[in-house]
Length: 278
Image 1 (cartoon, rainbow, N blue to C red):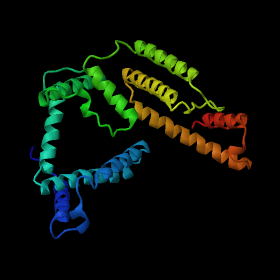
Image 2 (image 1 turned 135 degrees about the vertical axis):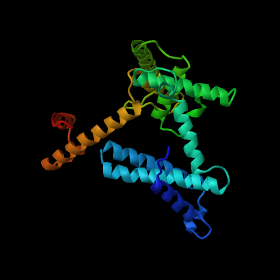
Image 3 (image 1 turned 180 degrees about the horizontal axis):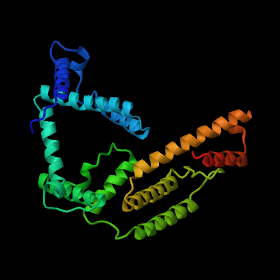
Image 4 (image 1 turned 120 degrees about the vertical axis):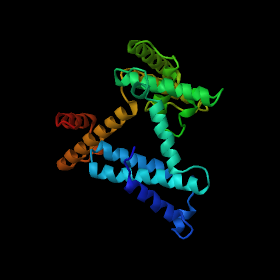
């Protein structure tokens, strides 16, 4: 391709200058580890802009994400490990390799079939790259738990460990819910229904484990339905925030704080928030 990207090249040169011996003292002393958390923070801020449908803010946040990529690459280049060109070359090759339905002879008629192909190619890559390594090694343990569950279940399904239909996953959910109820029923509890830890936490850990199984099963329901569990829960959290803000505003107008209202009043405000389309 003859097309060039002068602005990208200029940005890479700027970061190189900041890391040069006569550059910025702060930039020069950074390491991969010292700015690792920045990568996560900037990615989350970009997601916030996406969910707010704020294109101006998204443009800025994507620049911050790109800054992390280029700066990490420059740190690697300074140490003789790799360059930003290596990063671009590798990811370009990977995208071509993982889209055989576009660049090869494979076929995919919808997005779910594309994801299946993607996982199959990744599985083949894993087998070729490291004999004996686990399929799940590629799922970072630093991911939020819901995202981990989503990735883990998808990878296991790509290896054939899956239910034939979503109805069978619902059966698994019902089974896990029954086990959770059974564990909770025999656990010592305080007056407000919370599991007591007076038994050295044995029952509490059992109930927690069964609760985790229910959540994992629900993630599989979402996967079989073609849904993103992380995105779905984030949307629900945002919806709850909107409704709660409505309730706080209504309570303020009534001159009664929410924490002084009874359950019936709170339910009435919640219903009003839903009726308002929030």
